[in-house]
Length: 320
Image (cartoon, rainbow, N blue to C red; front, side, top):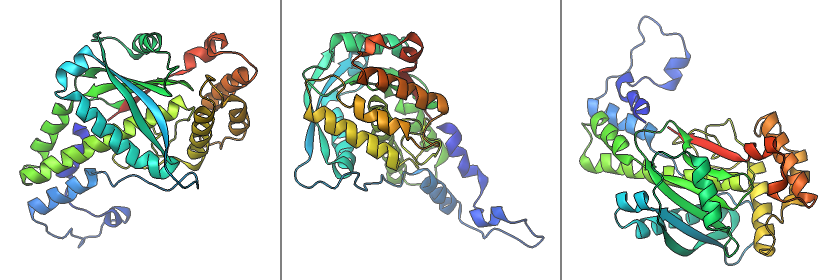
């Protein structure tokens, strides 16, 4: 995060001016220092999320049942964690409602009487899956020990078993970004600095959740920094690709229609992955997903996936 705020010290040259060779008498127009800070802050502020519908259905959004566990450290460091998590899910619903005509309905918020300080994602996710196999709900979300310091990518903040029913998100150490905002924008009013910080935090939380939810539905990474499935956080992230929407809409429809089956989307995903656009993920990612859904479509459970593919089903991403 701190690196992003270095934009304040670069001056106010426009993108067009940077594109052409500077001449002897080319001068950037003078601006008040506070104006430069305000413009720099504007570059760091999220521009919102794309709410273009993926499905054409009308009527009430369908409910996705979500159970949430918060571990001991998460609860200890986040005061009044339950209403804050509910507010976060409300912000997520403000996106998935218009796009997919669904809403996450919190079935329960539960204490996870464990500390996960210093543990990597794999053992925490394994523990979460053993704690709750998600047979009574559609997805299970674990909120784990916050990451201390500034993360450099989404993989440090979230994780999800590929094409599974579990998500894991770490609490974010927002004190680092708060200090960066305070130090970099001293000429802005306290209200302006607070709004920049709050807007970035809210956007980041929504993007993190949607990114991991996407992986749990089988989505591939995207190189476009404006796409939610890009592995590095960016304030420009705002949308799922058309292919992402097609995959997510299919997985949602199959799982909500056939809740008693663990992976009812598998057979239909085979055809989708066979025609996945070449710019969706790497060749390796596409091959791994296709291999997994083909095995599941053939009646094999996730436990029967060969070790090479099984190892690849753990996705790790990161946030800047």
